[in-house]
Length: 377
Image (tube, rainbow, N blue to C red; front, top):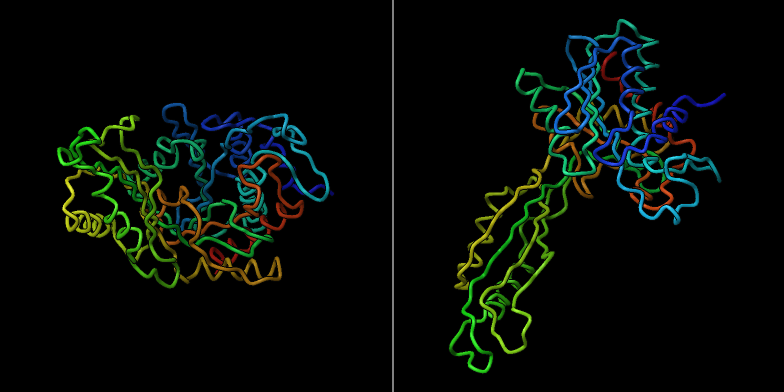
């Protein structure tokens, strides 16, 4: 018998939904949700397809969130099989979106179908939050739905995002938070002059070097139980006119903090500026807060997830906050408990993206078991 989660994953993987194009995925998913009693609300914005689908009106509200868009394929001739013609071979499912994250979306839907079939009068409410703008700028996707929910005073009690979180085998790692991202463009001012007469100018590169060394060596915090210590890294640095006989008049440094809940954006900004001031630099900074950190500690959702993975996969999972960020950063402010649980991340965004063939059915079983523990307790 064909596994329904595998078949649904293959069906939506066949849609060439390169961000921000949904390419018909939500029509497929929406029809399945409507068939089991969900009310569909499309909250599209600026060409981005967004779906908020809900079943029930009572608390608690349990939400599956995810995205139907995928990253570009890269050179088609490098793929062993076409990226939008999902293929099974050597015990794996190949195709763009297999890992990130159409399998997670498919598993959430089939888990919900099975749960509703078994418990049509279940307590609480179920919802899906789907977007086609996660892999792109993420300006008109999940953030737009969250804004709409905030405007009418809706909060989420529990949320699972099907992002690929596993490392070596399904369920060995789930994300219970993500670090924040704070970027800056630092312009250090000097005085341009002929390089043969350095006394007539002020070299911002020479002036900045000791400050850069101190910034690189600074311990910003020690992290905490769930987060590693905050890091500061330079991503780009530029100074000079391109000539070999000119002292530059300014230096531009682009940098980024990846920070935990042990620090705040305001605190990091103040400490960085204090170091620059101590070195007597003349400077300006443009700051961008890309994401705030979020965290779900041990509690009902984390305990349910760990139990479901133990029962389904026979392993103990690791709670982790490593890696980049996700749309969880937009959802966390209106959600009490949020986790990311999905298949292996080993081939996400790569040529020949793939997952183990048994991952879809197991992931669906994990999701269904979590639903049972949360809503039928």
